Amino acid sequence: MTSSSVASPNFGDLALLPAVLSAVETLGYQTPSPIQMETIPALLEGRDMLGQAQTGTGKTAAFALPLLSRLELTRREPQVLVMAPTRELAQQVAVSFSRYGQNLQGLEVATLCGGQEYREQLGALRRGAQVVVGTPGRIIDHLDRGSLKLDGLSALVLDEADEMLRMGFIDDVKRVVADTPKEAQRVFFSATLPAEIERIVNRYLVDPVKVAIESRTTTGENIEQHLVRVDGGAKLEALSRILEVEPVDGAIVFVRTRAACTTLTEQLSARGLNVASLSGDLDQSLRERTIQRLKRGKVDVLIATDVAARGLDVPRITHVFNYDLPQDSEAYTHRIGRTGRAGRTGTSITFVGFREGRKVGWIEQATGQKMSEMAVPDEAVIRAHRDEAFHQKVIAALTAGAEEQQALVERLVGEGYDPVELACAFARLARADEAPIGRLQAPRKERAPRDAKPGRGPRDRAPSEGMTRYRVAVGHKDGVKPGQLVGALANEGGIEGARIGRIDIRNAFSVVELPSSLPSSILAKMARARVAGRPLEISEDRGTPERAPRRRNDDGQAPIRRQSRA
Ligand code: ADP
Ligand code: MG
Image 1 (cartoon, rainbow, N blue to C red):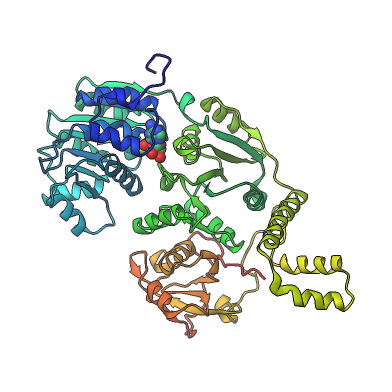
Image 2: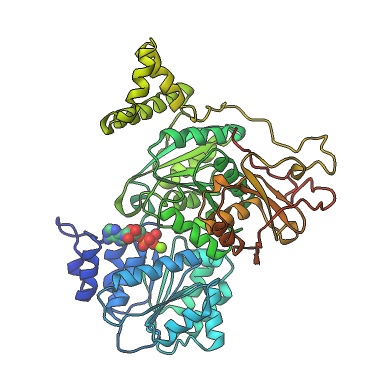
């Protein structure tokens, strides 16, 4: 780290363009982060760079501020090209460039990501975007079409280079790096330095400045890290309880596999939580909409796999759960870095099975921080918490006044009932919808009943009360999973996932229960949703049988049915 005088470092000392500096002030950044202190001067000089720093250390501004300061705004061709491994990351970087460049007259930022219309991208390029941010696939696409030219490039940035390689973009990366003009600046950021990156660096970077920021001093200091000892079958109940009592605004729950993502999303939404999943199962536009919903507070709990949530920057995430332990300490750091963004504090809660204790040791060693043990809230804690919440509600109702209830209450009192007993009865009625507290033991595995005979699948029962069955035009043959359907229907229709009922995936189609009260305008919106590349074409299910119902889905598990909460 740069040793400096007692006064904390200042953006004003960094020779940034005044228009860029004023944007930084508008955004309320007080002092540059360590990586920004180290990289900005060298990047302003046009040096090549290899930066190694963990997530959440402010890398985007570290390259965006100096590169924006060096743009020739009147030269209307790509001057800065940033490659990022996922569409979400690319989009975040593009938004950051626009923000940091908000006072630069004539700045145009083009975002080139897969899953998006070409028209808009071509438009931005034709208008002479000076900054281009994208994912490798689509960037190569535009290079092949001739719509993206690198001749005028003055800087190429690889963000999350190691992740890019891990995702198999090595050839795309090599090609773009090789196509970049010799005199252009090359800037790589990476959390780790695998040999492959070292090779590209040695081959293509000229006398690079190497900056490494110790992860220990930059990660997790503002994150309270807990561990909870809980084993497989009890995890769901433990998670529900903790979510209930912790002061959670937004949460990300990490699981190991896509299948686990789907299952847990189902389970939590059945418990009435506003939950969505973010895994590679969803197509890009759905993933992006899911993140928007999380940002806007339409979704509070996101169930995610590592790759899908990499780099996610949503300030309202107060809690990160490691429902399944991460692969390694690096993944751990990335995961918990989703909370405590931008100087906030955050909480991480790691579930550790009874045979996983040793793994905690290596995580703690790598982060240099100890996790403190946290107990799963017991029933008494949950009840006390609910009492407290109800207490607040009652006080609020008292303050707001409830005169319209007075005649009724006076009548009951007049009939001779004791006021305290009456109040108890009211409280009980008012709290009737509180969820029962589950048991903290491994629940029995849910299976299709063994005696289920062909012709007696879920579809042959009556739909749940208040629900109507609809048929959607995707099924096993399209590889569709229940979570995808929930995600698509909830996103398109703008309804909570919890309102979607049983899902029965058949081979050529699926049957979904939706509230009978849904207006046709919402159904029309849902019908336009695409899953597995196909429109859903919702229609009411009249129960044309498709021979025997499938007993197992593609994962070899029993079909997941959504529990309706009675
Ligand atoms: P990284 O790429 O290293 O994971 P980001 O560039 O996404 O980190 O920045 C993380 C968060 O910190 C963002 O919300 C960003 O707005 C904020 N941030 C970056 N630099 C500063 C700074 N100097 N002061 C305050 N907040 C900052
Ligand atoms: Mg980043």
